[in-house]
Length: 140
Image 1 (cartoon, one colour):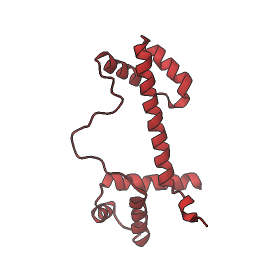
Image 2 (image 1 turned 180 degrees about the vertical axis):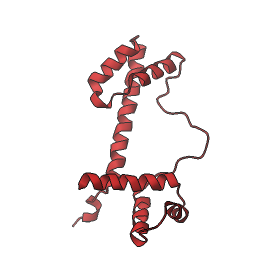
Image 3 (image 1 turned 45 degrees about the horizontal axis):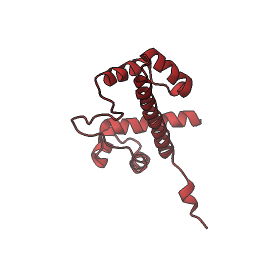
């Protein structure tokens, strides 16, 4: 008999899958922009075609213009270049569960205290807490 727990998916995991899907669509849109640029289409034409094919997930017209300007300079890379500075920490389901446990144990715990105990940024703690509140409002 299969383990039923393996089929349970947390909201954080669902959100991660949705983000990956949007990222994939963005990558597909960039590849299409390169294709249409190489065909000699203007940014307005490229945006119109992308709107017809991608619907609500179309990049903005300003993004299309920005991409076309990169293409004109010979930069056909579809990936972001590495940026200097400290890399962002990744929100994992484990971190979310740890925050929920700390809050359930100590209802008046501060974000600073959670930050110190888990070693993550205050912004990340606030984001997780507010996302949880938003999800509770939607489910109510």
